[in-house]
Image (cartoon, rainbow, N blue to C red; front, top):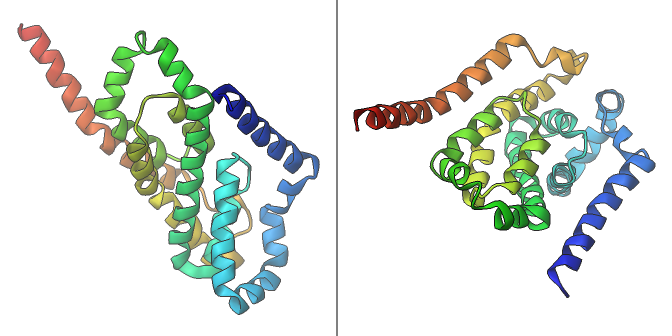
Length: 230
Protein backbone atom coordinates (compact mmCIF):
# COMPACT_ATOMS: atom_id res chain seq x y z
CA UNK A 1 0.00 0.00 0.00
CA UNK A 2 1.36 3.42 -0.93
CA UNK A 3 2.39 5.70 1.92
CA UNK A 4 -0.16 8.34 0.91
CA UNK A 5 -3.02 5.88 1.35
CA UNK A 6 -1.72 4.83 4.76
CA UNK A 7 -1.63 8.47 5.80
CA UNK A 8 -5.18 9.04 4.55
CA UNK A 9 -6.39 5.96 6.44
CA UNK A 10 -4.69 7.09 9.66
CA UNK A 11 -6.05 10.63 9.33
CA UNK A 12 -9.53 9.23 8.64
CA UNK A 13 -9.39 7.05 11.76
CA UNK A 14 -8.37 10.03 13.88
CA UNK A 15 -11.13 12.25 12.46
CA UNK A 16 -13.77 9.52 12.83
CA UNK A 17 -12.83 8.84 16.46
CA UNK A 18 -12.96 12.53 17.35
CA UNK A 19 -16.28 12.91 15.50
CA UNK A 20 -17.82 9.91 17.28
CA UNK A 21 -16.69 11.18 20.67
CA UNK A 22 -18.34 14.53 19.95
CA UNK A 23 -21.42 13.08 18.24
CA UNK A 24 -22.09 10.54 21.01
CA UNK A 25 -21.26 13.19 23.60
CA UNK A 26 -18.78 10.81 25.23
CA UNK A 27 -16.56 13.67 26.38
CA UNK A 28 -19.38 14.83 28.65
CA UNK A 29 -18.57 11.94 30.99
CA UNK A 30 -15.10 13.28 31.74
CA UNK A 31 -16.23 16.30 33.71
CA UNK A 32 -15.46 17.59 37.18
CA UNK A 33 -19.15 17.41 38.09
CA UNK A 34 -19.43 13.72 37.17
CA UNK A 35 -16.26 12.93 39.09
CA UNK A 36 -17.68 14.53 42.23
CA UNK A 37 -21.04 12.82 41.71
CA UNK A 38 -19.82 9.26 41.14
CA UNK A 39 -16.49 9.26 42.96
CA UNK A 40 -17.56 6.92 45.77
CA UNK A 41 -19.01 4.27 43.44
CA UNK A 42 -15.92 4.37 41.24
CA UNK A 43 -13.62 4.26 44.29
CA UNK A 44 -15.33 1.07 45.47
CA UNK A 45 -14.65 -0.53 42.07
CA UNK A 46 -11.02 0.61 42.07
CA UNK A 47 -10.42 -0.79 45.55
CA UNK A 48 -11.88 -4.13 44.47
CA UNK A 49 -10.04 -4.23 41.12
CA UNK A 50 -6.85 -2.22 41.61
CA UNK A 51 -4.66 -3.67 38.86
CA UNK A 52 -7.39 -3.63 36.21
CA UNK A 53 -8.34 -0.09 37.22
CA UNK A 54 -4.74 1.16 37.07
CA UNK A 55 -4.07 -0.37 33.64
CA UNK A 56 -7.46 0.80 32.38
CA UNK A 57 -6.84 4.32 33.65
CA UNK A 58 -3.47 4.55 31.89
CA UNK A 59 -5.01 3.23 28.66
CA UNK A 60 -7.84 5.77 28.78
CA UNK A 61 -5.38 8.58 29.51
CA UNK A 62 -3.24 7.55 26.55
CA UNK A 63 -6.26 7.59 24.23
CA UNK A 64 -7.50 10.96 25.50
CA UNK A 65 -4.10 12.57 24.94
CA UNK A 66 -3.35 10.76 21.67
CA UNK A 67 -6.62 11.94 20.10
CA UNK A 68 -6.36 15.40 21.69
CA UNK A 69 -9.67 14.96 23.52
CA UNK A 70 -10.75 17.08 26.51
CA UNK A 71 -10.71 15.57 29.98
CA UNK A 72 -7.03 15.04 30.86
CA UNK A 73 -7.20 17.43 33.82
CA UNK A 74 -10.24 15.62 35.24
CA UNK A 75 -8.50 12.29 34.76
CA UNK A 76 -5.51 13.59 36.73
CA UNK A 77 -7.80 14.62 39.59
CA UNK A 78 -9.56 11.26 39.47
CA UNK A 79 -6.22 9.49 39.56
CA UNK A 80 -5.27 11.28 42.77
CA UNK A 81 -8.58 10.40 44.40
CA UNK A 82 -8.48 6.74 43.36
CA UNK A 83 -4.78 5.93 43.64
CA UNK A 84 -3.28 8.58 45.91
CA UNK A 85 0.10 10.11 45.11
CA UNK A 86 1.11 6.90 43.32
CA UNK A 87 -1.21 8.25 40.65
CA UNK A 88 1.55 10.68 39.58
CA UNK A 89 3.26 7.69 37.93
CA UNK A 90 0.05 6.62 36.17
CA UNK A 91 -0.69 10.15 34.94
CA UNK A 92 2.87 10.57 33.72
CA UNK A 93 2.79 7.27 31.83
CA UNK A 94 -0.58 8.00 30.22
CA UNK A 95 0.24 11.60 29.29
CA UNK A 96 3.73 10.83 27.99
CA UNK A 97 2.84 7.86 25.80
CA UNK A 98 -0.33 9.56 24.59
CA UNK A 99 1.76 12.60 23.61
CA UNK A 100 4.25 10.36 21.78
CA UNK A 101 1.41 8.82 19.74
CA UNK A 102 0.08 12.27 18.81
CA UNK A 103 3.63 13.35 17.93
CA UNK A 104 4.11 10.26 15.75
CA UNK A 105 0.80 10.81 13.95
CA UNK A 106 1.56 14.47 13.20
CA UNK A 107 5.04 13.63 11.96
CA UNK A 108 3.89 10.68 9.83
CA UNK A 109 0.87 12.41 8.27
CA UNK A 110 2.44 15.75 7.41
CA UNK A 111 5.62 16.46 9.39
CA UNK A 112 7.98 14.42 7.21
CA UNK A 113 6.47 16.01 4.10
CA UNK A 114 7.03 19.51 5.47
CA UNK A 115 10.65 18.73 6.34
CA UNK A 116 11.23 17.16 2.93
CA UNK A 117 9.70 20.03 0.97
CA UNK A 118 10.82 23.01 3.04
CA UNK A 119 13.88 21.59 4.82
CA UNK A 120 16.29 23.91 3.02
CA UNK A 121 14.33 27.00 4.02
CA UNK A 122 14.06 25.74 7.61
CA UNK A 123 17.77 24.96 7.96
CA UNK A 124 18.52 27.61 10.57
CA UNK A 125 15.31 26.79 12.45
CA UNK A 126 16.12 23.08 12.49
CA UNK A 127 19.69 23.79 13.59
CA UNK A 128 18.42 25.88 16.49
CA UNK A 129 16.02 23.09 17.47
CA UNK A 130 18.81 20.55 17.30
CA UNK A 131 20.87 22.60 19.72
CA UNK A 132 18.18 24.02 22.01
CA UNK A 133 15.03 22.01 21.31
CA UNK A 134 15.21 20.24 24.65
CA UNK A 135 15.18 23.56 26.49
CA UNK A 136 12.29 24.92 24.42
CA UNK A 137 10.18 21.80 24.91
CA UNK A 138 10.98 21.60 28.61
CA UNK A 139 9.84 25.20 29.04
CA UNK A 140 6.61 24.56 27.13
CA UNK A 141 5.87 21.51 29.28
CA UNK A 142 6.68 23.24 32.57
CA UNK A 143 4.45 26.26 31.87
CA UNK A 144 0.86 24.89 31.74
CA UNK A 145 -0.55 27.91 29.87
CA UNK A 146 0.57 26.32 26.60
CA UNK A 147 -2.02 23.78 25.31
CA UNK A 148 -0.64 20.27 25.79
CA UNK A 149 -2.18 18.84 22.63
CA UNK A 150 -0.92 21.72 20.48
CA UNK A 151 2.67 21.16 21.60
CA UNK A 152 2.38 17.48 20.68
CA UNK A 153 1.14 18.25 17.18
CA UNK A 154 3.48 21.15 16.41
CA UNK A 155 6.53 19.25 17.67
CA UNK A 156 5.68 16.49 15.20
CA UNK A 157 5.97 19.00 12.36
CA UNK A 158 9.54 19.88 13.31
CA UNK A 159 12.72 17.87 13.03
CA UNK A 160 13.12 17.42 16.77
CA UNK A 161 14.06 13.88 17.77
CA UNK A 162 11.64 11.44 19.35
CA UNK A 163 14.00 10.86 22.28
CA UNK A 164 14.14 14.59 23.06
CA UNK A 165 10.37 14.89 22.78
CA UNK A 166 9.88 11.85 25.02
CA UNK A 167 12.13 12.80 27.92
CA UNK A 168 11.23 16.49 27.97
CA UNK A 169 7.56 15.52 28.10
CA UNK A 170 8.10 12.92 30.83
CA UNK A 171 10.13 15.33 32.96
CA UNK A 172 8.33 18.57 32.14
CA UNK A 173 4.85 17.39 33.12
CA UNK A 174 5.90 16.13 36.57
CA UNK A 175 5.19 19.39 38.47
CA UNK A 176 1.74 19.78 36.91
CA UNK A 177 0.95 16.11 37.48
CA UNK A 178 1.90 16.39 41.16
CA UNK A 179 -0.35 19.44 41.61
CA UNK A 180 -3.42 17.86 40.02
CA UNK A 181 -2.95 14.44 41.58
CA UNK A 182 -2.49 15.99 45.02
CA UNK A 183 -5.63 18.07 44.46
CA UNK A 184 -7.38 14.81 43.63
CA UNK A 185 -6.40 13.36 47.00
CA UNK A 186 -8.19 16.37 48.52
CA UNK A 187 -11.16 16.16 46.17
CA UNK A 188 -13.75 16.68 48.89
CA UNK A 189 -12.38 20.19 49.50
CA UNK A 190 -12.13 21.10 45.80
CA UNK A 191 -15.29 22.78 44.51
CA UNK A 192 -14.16 23.65 40.98
CA UNK A 193 -11.19 23.40 38.65
CA UNK A 194 -10.49 27.04 39.45
CA UNK A 195 -9.64 26.07 43.03
CA UNK A 196 -6.57 24.20 41.75
CA UNK A 197 -4.95 26.83 39.53
CA UNK A 198 -3.67 29.99 41.22
CA UNK A 199 -1.50 32.82 39.96
CA UNK A 200 1.16 31.86 42.51
CA UNK A 201 1.33 28.33 41.08
CA UNK A 202 1.43 29.60 37.50
CA UNK A 203 4.19 32.01 38.47
CA UNK A 204 6.21 29.16 39.99
CA UNK A 205 5.79 27.09 36.81
CA UNK A 206 6.75 30.08 34.68
CA UNK A 207 9.90 30.55 36.76
CA UNK A 208 10.82 26.89 36.26
CA UNK A 209 10.29 27.33 32.53
CA UNK A 210 12.50 30.41 32.42
CA UNK A 211 15.24 28.60 34.34
CA UNK A 212 15.32 25.89 31.68
CA UNK A 213 15.93 28.61 29.07
CA UNK A 214 18.93 30.13 30.82
CA UNK A 215 21.44 27.88 28.94
CA UNK A 216 19.88 29.02 25.65
CA UNK A 217 20.21 32.71 26.57
CA UNK A 218 23.83 32.21 27.64
CA UNK A 219 24.68 30.38 24.42
CA UNK A 220 23.07 33.03 22.21
CA UNK A 221 24.83 35.86 24.06
CA UNK A 222 28.14 34.01 23.66
CA UNK A 223 27.57 33.51 19.92
CA UNK A 224 26.63 37.18 19.50
CA UNK A 225 29.78 38.34 21.30
CA UNK A 226 31.96 36.03 19.21
CA UNK A 227 30.30 37.37 16.05
CA UNK A 228 31.06 40.96 17.01
CA UNK A 229 34.64 40.08 17.93
CA UNK A 230 35.36 38.76 14.41
